[in-house]
Image 1 (cartoon, one colour):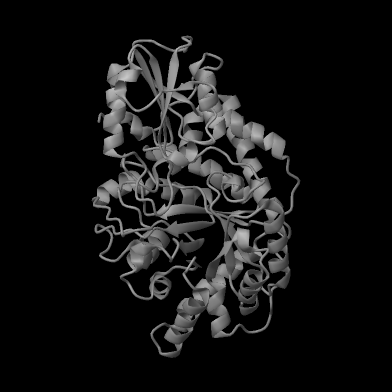
Image 2 (cartoon, rainbow, N blue to C red; image 1 turned 135 degrees about the horizontal axis):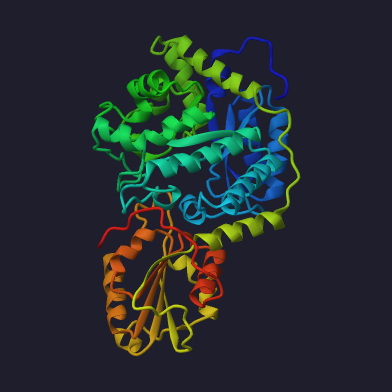
Amino acid sequence: MGDFPDRYLSTIEKAYQIIISRIDGLKVTDLSYRALQLSLVDKGIGGFIIFGGTRDDIREFISEAQSRARIPLFISSDIERGVGQQIEGMTLFPCQMAVAAAINRADKDDLDLVQDALRAVASEAGELGINMAFSPVLDVNRDPDNPIICTRAYSDDPETVSWFGDQYIKAFEAAGIISCAKHFPGHGDTSADSHIELPVIRKSMDELYALDLVPFREAVRAGVGGIMIGHLSVPALDTRPASLSAKVIKGLLRQEMGFTGLVLTDALNMHALEEFGEAGLESLKAGADILLHPDNADSTATSIFTAIEEGRLGPQTLDSAVNRTIDKKRALPDTMQSRINIERHTLLSERMSRNSITLLKDSPKILPLTDGDIRLILSGDDKYFGPSILTGKFASMDGDNPETSADKIIVIAVFTSVAAWRGSSGIADIEKTRLRSIIKKARGSVVVSFGSPYVLRHFSDADALIAAYDPTIQAQQAVFDCLTGKAPFRGGLPVYIPER
């Protein structure tokens, strides 16, 4: 990919080369912000992680940055749900748990659908110039209250996670995009968000090998290009956090599992490591190749340079990371451009969403809904209330008094989402109590979770329970069609839902 300099790289240039810095895509048209980011390119930054922005603005910025770089840049992004997760004008696909719910692996049409969808994601990434996808999530979600993984995981079953992870890895790598599996050695069994605090995974070695490590071992076999190390405390592996642990990176991942690709830290601006001083430097010492999203790229590069000057870091450690980084860049294709068909991709996304809608319960049987006296209650994250299409299809219930639900069929739409820094993927206890009171009074009740399916465990008294996995408009339309009998429920639940 492009030309590589034959000249000697200075220590400070090497330090910049192993850093991927943040780009706020909505700011790239601001001249001062743009100049600041391009100055990092001049210093030798290894690449950028893109958050937000519009299709044309991001494509134009990436093109200028790459043309200015002496060594081609890694252009990365969190595109677990497609490029539309980050970039306006591109396609948003269902979350990974919805994909697992939608795809019957014994059905050829479903297998074709997942392959078509993945090719669509890869082509949209290529059209912008994204050459590194921070996907797939290979965490095995075993904690119903997991605030940061939840629906980002395919399943709570390691074999299912492994299979879907393989599909994503092979599709990206075949398209010339580096796949990056995360969050090694597994972020699925915790109720803590590593953006806020350091999660502790209290599992035995046997449990880790039987569950959490299974998808990552398979990913190595499948040829994954990168693996992201989570900011996780796993006492069975080391007393130090995984992203600062040579035992985890050099011992378990490199030597035991045989991984030869890029090792990346999770974002270094997260609070999980705030008690560990120069986290970027410590990660490099432990065996990481790429330092992702530090608060300040300049100060991180300077800390590496200073550590080498003062003899606190051997230059061979930096050289090893730089060499692996540049070797990976040499293997990237010369061009990432491709023709895309957003309309076709949107149809693929809608079909995936429609297939994912899962009926957990309908007893006594009240579906499909044909009674005209149906009332709607919106609950959970109110940012989804305004754009909800359900308010135009069902009459909203007057007030919060449970008495008003008597002799009516109630549809309760619970909106939740998984996002960094929130610390929760569910709803408040007071809201659960209110909704259960309404369910008790209603003639019939349907609870739909647009987000975490685990929310449904709190409403076992409802007549019907439906998992939709995403709060999107297309998921809402798909649920409405299923509720009214216009479409069948095709989804299969990819996780175990415990009793409340």
